[in-house]
Image 1 (tube, one colour):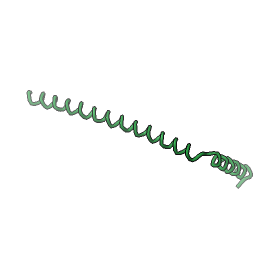
Image 2 (image 1 turned 90 degrees about the horizontal axis):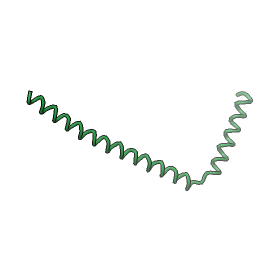
Image 3 (image 1 turned 180 degrees about the horizontal axis):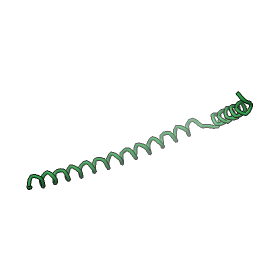
Image 4 (image 1 turned 120 degrees about the vertical axis):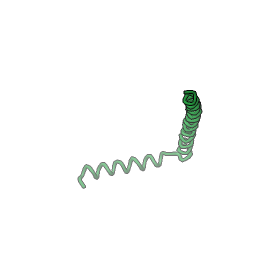
Length: 71
């Protein structure tokens, strides 16, 4: 290992240790919970859009089947 690689590892290790000491576990958990809540909301929106699309496509299919039967 070269001198600069070892120096870089030392700097990263010290920086990570400093960040670990500065972190407040309660704040970290709050951030994680907010992020998860945001993802749940996005998921709910996507599911509701998918359900609307499904109903629209079923209606279009029914219209197409009716047209085919008329022909």
